[in-house]
Image (cartoon, rainbow, N blue to C red; front, side):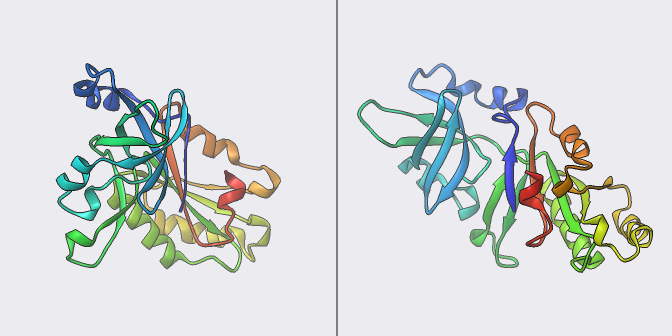
Length: 214
């Protein structure tokens, strides 16, 4: 899954969630953009900074799923003379993508949080697989984000009309768009969903064109 946001993705709901921390001059809002083994890259209005989790956040987490994840909005503390900032609170999530052992809440791992729209990307070539599309759509719906289908490589489809019809049968009310990112065709459809303050994620198998879309 490739994760991108327009600007910081800050909106009114997170403004309200950060209100309880606003009176503290040592804290500022930030968003996690990269995680590598409990070291986080976060972005603030002033730029990017590396951070770790405070002991309080670790101890309060009742499960792995409550630890900070990519996409989380957090309250951040930066101290003079310290190279790493500290994440002292995680703001409530609007949506979440997670994985874990069936029936085991403590094993849940949140892969991305606060995604507004999920672009489910599938090639119309040999990668075409309606059953896989169904699974991705289920994952998108369960996350709390709005799914959108992007169909790539239309020039390699053996029967474009038939494949679009198959997608329509699976998609139900989910919007679907044919795009050719390699030729910069149809990307206006993608941009239309990414309004200011909106975060998007791309789901799809390797080689379907996710990186080219970005």
